[in-house]
Image (cartoon, rainbow, N blue to C red; front, side, top):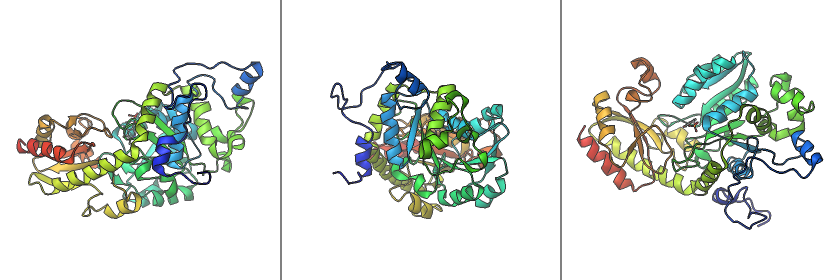
Length: 427
Ligand SMILES: *Cc1c(COP(=O)(O)O)cnc(C)c1O
């Protein structure tokens, strides 16, 4: 075994975990404790001064969370990871480590609706300015970059329509501008796309979705690619300036290729506080063990459902890059040959009224605002998540009046299709 590099499915089950040294427990225990006893005063001092690694207090680190961190870092091929309370907390701590008040970042217009809100409104309070760019127009990303730009943010597979982003092309733009590329890899999971292989520098996840996979726990992860040079021109002072609270150490000099993950932990998580409960870490770890099996089934089912919808007389269009006829099928084959994920949209010929009717008729599908559950999920964005927007804004966001979004579960495809067939009959 010694020199073998384990495959993805082996890492999904084992990475980061060992039998518990004191009890022999084989599954990772839930270390449900707030704090950890020091060996002595010197040990405590070295932990607080970042001269030694170890547990102090669960807001900053916990052994159950550490297994999750090591596992996701291994699955993504990063140098280190940080588990936090939610996907939004992951995005927030990344920006906190990168941006100063008055700085800009460029973000793709096709994002999870919650990220659009977070960037447009809450981030204004920190003086962080988002500049939006259309991911189908690469020139728009170049034009959007200013001397104050500190990062680019995209999703690998974008919500809500499942669009595939050309990560390598946007990475080239980020390199040229000297800024890190952050990829939200939630909808793909590392099983379908590994963004570091295409030039990403930082990955964030909502573990709430496919990583946990069972619709039962909120959580998030930050993964450090170890690729970005933080020393350049002092543009990232959180990493390149001496830290007064840690005896003047410079994080990128002390921690090298995992300095970004350390910065998110010892500055962001320590001071802002969105810690992941060890119980949720356990749930998400358990979910990850079956990630490859679930993603294969999600993708197989989704191809069947999307293909069936293209032939239905009440359906105007289907947008799923996993279908051979889709305009993004080429990108899907390049970035996610194992499958294009389980989230996609379609349009109803009957428009808004038909969408409202369909979500009220389904029985196997759950009508709710989530994705990446074992269960099949449905939402009509125009009457729910995107209700506040003007008709024009709705259409731009891919949430026009006729649009329905599905997240296909791992039930039997025939039952998923039967539920849609019966519900469409009433539309
Ligand atoms: C859900 C989601 C988030 C936010 O994650 P939470 O865990 O709900 O905070 C961020 N990005 C994407 C793509 C998501 O689907």
